[in-house]
Each structure stands twice: as structure tokens, then as C-alpha cells.
Length: 465
Image (cartoon, rainbow, N blue to C red):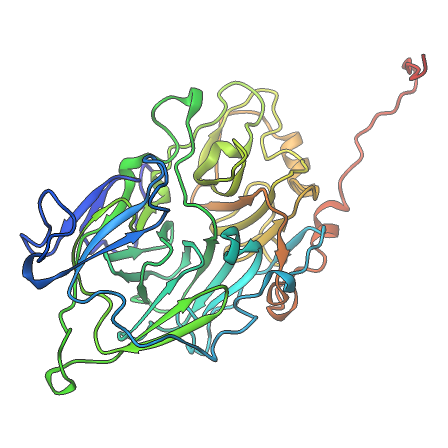
């Protein structure tokens, strides 16, 4: 650290900055100067505005981008429902099971048959809210065995998608350009942006969160100051890249392209005679981006006690209640622990927030690994007010540990999707996937040791007046 050494070399150029107004053009002169919608845009392009917020949203929250493309997005036949949409993938709110038990999953299966691409390999594990009302979120696992077809594209009208790569590289083409997303990187694809996912290193597995309301922001730093945690300069956005096939007949190399949309947790598709990836230039602050988790500047105690896990927040999607998030994305990267007279792993707690955890690589210092433990590719869910914390063995080890400076998590990274909402679990997550560790709670905490020394010989104060 301060950055990840990836096994796959980067192959694209990017622009840097979070929530910045960026511009990119694949051909000089394609971007208009001093205006957005000229009567005749350069090169015979169409100007199209993509709005991620209402036109009248406050300036500091307004999200929009102008695209200059060969054909506008509306040039397609009507969408029709697709038979591929199943409740296994996109469970409705009323189909979720709301339970207080702590849950943990073994690593989710890869797509052994290689029949699934990124979209068909997405499975809803838990969620809350309703995309129709633009409220809440969905938490997913993806397991893809093959690349999407070159003539296919996907977008979600339901929300922004945060992708956490765990195994296998994702080569993502978007309307704005290309992103190479490798394990230890994340990507965010905004609502409405068309994309396709290729698997250059073979099958891929990971996690995803779809945000039905608002957009991700960097958390406020408060007394930390002006730098720390995830810094804006380390977020990378694509540069314009387009394909020119509009207006071509089949004999001229023109191809039919299938565009699929997720709309209120159902899939619809249309076929059009031109590629959706025909954006020659763009400018704005609404675009896909990626981030290397190795660049996260971890902040922690240098005196005593264990700080709240909010200190590890990378991205946050705030609710209307100040300081409370619909979704926080939190990571637990390698870090030094130096607190004096301090129980150093995460403390036992019950939280008004729901916590869904996953492990990208390595081991997590508060939970044992190995068979039946918390291992890469698996997950856990501690719902609203469900007690949790280190397992018994981890607690005893930390209680007896010599308190010298120690670096934990070397070669490891765990993450958490945290939400103020109560999470419902899908039928796929509870039963179909067959990965729930039925003995999780008992194995973790039934062996918690009683260290109480008793009150013998001590004065017990009366609770009565």
C-alpha cells in the first residue's frame, strides 16, 4: 500500500476525480464549445442529456452529463418482457424474509457450467425498499462464467450499481468508455448507463449493491481534516470510446444489438440495428467510475479504545436523516493496531444499522477462517439490533494478547454494506443457494467464556430508595 499491485496490468487511460465535472472526446472538435445543444452538433452527432437527478436539484447535488452520439438512445423498437427475469434474481419486497437471526454463508458457487454472464449471474441475497418509490437497496452476489455477447447491452432503471470484484477481472464497456475492474477494485455504474461485461481472465465472482435512492458520496471528514480515507483524486472515470456502425446494412457489417433493462425488478429487452456504444464525446458529472481499495488511507486510534467502523467508510449514500446512510460501503484493509489497554478487534455490539459483510481476500481478524468460517467469497448478515462480535476463540486470543504494535489484515480485505434499513433475505439467499451455515451462531458464540469473578466479599448497593 498506498496502492494495489495487480496481477493484471492496466490497459486503459482514465480521467481522475470524484464528483468532478469531466469531459472527454474521442475525436477533436466533437465537443461543442460554450454551449450544450447547438443546432447542428459537430460531425453530424446528436446531443443527448443524461440526468441522474431532477433538473431542479440543488447545484451541489445536481447530476447530469451531455452525450454526443451517432444516434439518440430513443431510436429503438418498444421493450418487451424477457423470460429470463426470475424471482431468484430480482425478488420483490413482499417476497423477502425478515428475520432477526445472525446469518453467514459459505463461499457462493462459481458458474461451473459457464452458462451465465454478469447479468444472468446476479442473484439477490438481501434488500429493502422499493425501486418504484426510489427507496432502499438490493445486495447481490454475482457469479459469471462467460462474457456478455458483443451485441448485447444492459442498464438498470432501478438504481446505481456498486460492484465489488472478488475473483476474476471484469472488462466493462460503458457508453462513456472502458473500465478494467480487478479484485481489490470497485466500480459504480450509475442508473441508466448502458454497459456490457467481458471476462478476460475467465470466470468471475463478487458482490454488488444496487442503490435505489440517491447516489454515493464521499463521507464528510469532520475533524479528520481535508485529507484521508478515500481521496477524490484516486477515483477514475473512462475516456470516450465509440463504435461506428449506425446506418449500416447487414451486408455492410451492421449488426442487431439487444439492449436489456432492469425496470422495477423485472427485465425488458429490445433489439435495435445500431450499437448503444456510439458516444463520441461527453461532458458532465454523472458517469461510471472505479477505485483501487489499496489507495484507501486508513485512519485509526493511536492511543486507546477501538474506533467505530464508520471510520473505514469509502462511500456513503445518505438518507434524509443527517448522519444516517441508506448505504455505506466500508472496508477493513491492512492496518496497524497500537491501542494501549485496548481490546483491539471489533467490540461486541447491537446496531440500529444492518451489516452485510463479505471477504475479498485473506482473513478477517475478528472471525476464524477455514471450513465453516468466514472466508473469501462468503458473506454474513447481522440485521437491525442482532447482537454480534468476535467469535469466542478470537475474543479469548485478543483478551490474552500482548499489546504491542501489530499489523493486522496483511494481504486481506473485508468489506461491509451497512444500511439504516432492516434487511429482508431472498429465498435464494436463505435456501436455494444452499450456502447458509446453519450452526453459525452456536459455533461462534456458544463457547463464550464467563469471566465474571462474582460479588463475594463486595458491597452490593441497593437499587431501592
